[in-house]
Image (cartoon, rainbow, N blue to C red; front, top):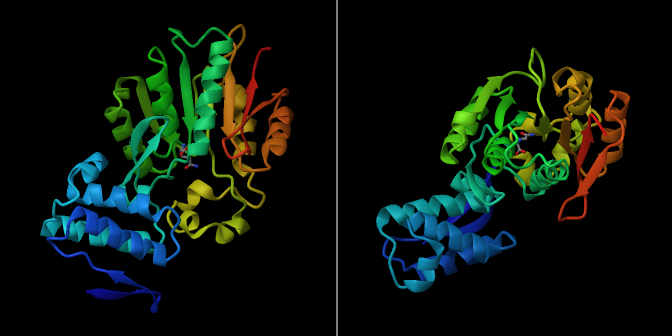
Length: 310
Ligand code: GLN
């Protein structure tokens, strides 16, 4: 059976409907063809994951039991997933889950879909603490500004078992997701959550601040890949006219929240491609010179960090 799929009234592809009784092998082939027809790179991999999830199986079971059949509920689930993927919705959004630094995080429409690039921040933070001899056993106080799914702070708390953390976000629905992710990864007894805009009204001092703030210049949002602009929350992306508004706001308050001498403190930021120099300048103007940078796996400078004591 074929169904014409329409987006804004325009048919874009015939979607092959998967019927109950279809084998896993056939289902994967059908979904792969459908996704390939609309130009989705990696269609076969996506088809395998979605088929496994729809069938309630692990992906290894697809190889072990290719002739197992989908029941009516599983076929319905797979059809829904395939329809969403045909509209270029990312698989992570369809599944409501994304792996980050080796752990699975719930995501919802209220949260940014964590990107592998952001793992650069985790690597940089652990490297800096290692260098200072503060990675093991130090009761570090961490803060994450604009936590979204909580991927950064939950990962850091999981990697640093003696640390405690505060996660902030302007969006209460995102904080609820971050809390569930903290529970899932066993760190919720060491994490507080707080609804606020950037560092507004913040008191207390922290040893390590991380933030992946919105950094896309407003006018560029419309030109992003469909999968970014259409499915990530706009306020997680929009960094104002030049993309740097959030860095300026955080830099202006940084000295109020970082630990005071004789303790060192670090602030680490994710930056957009090409923004590292500007962000380092903003931090230097705010009294934090000497930024260090880290490059992501795509070759872009992705993390800018400053330290209070050198
Ligand atoms: N901290 C979250 C992440 O890195 C959310 C960031 C955001 O929404 N800009 O994915």
